Image (cartoon, rainbow, N blue to C red; front, side):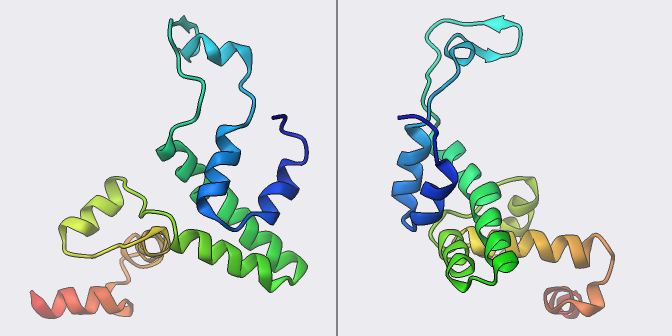
Length: 142
């Protein structure tokens, strides 16, 4: 499959599994068939994108783009599709979300983990604990 009309294909698909398959069917440049890293040739490099990488692309690129495009064009369908995509992807796992998880915050999907990342950016990083529902609850327990 060629990557022609990738944008329109992604805009049409609302199913996570179909989007993952679309990403797996994209052509890979011949360079990456023999490399994991720049300047280091390797044998037996897998040329298909892994499920975790596909989910990260869907989470951090496709969902964001769908939402922004929907806002820009005033098309609720794309905004809803972006939210649905986030609700159907697993929660993002990184150093930030791991800290919240260890503190007892449950993130069932990517929508929740993106919300936590946004809360951290706008409240925790700005030291605005008293303006955050989670921050107030933590401070009351202390």
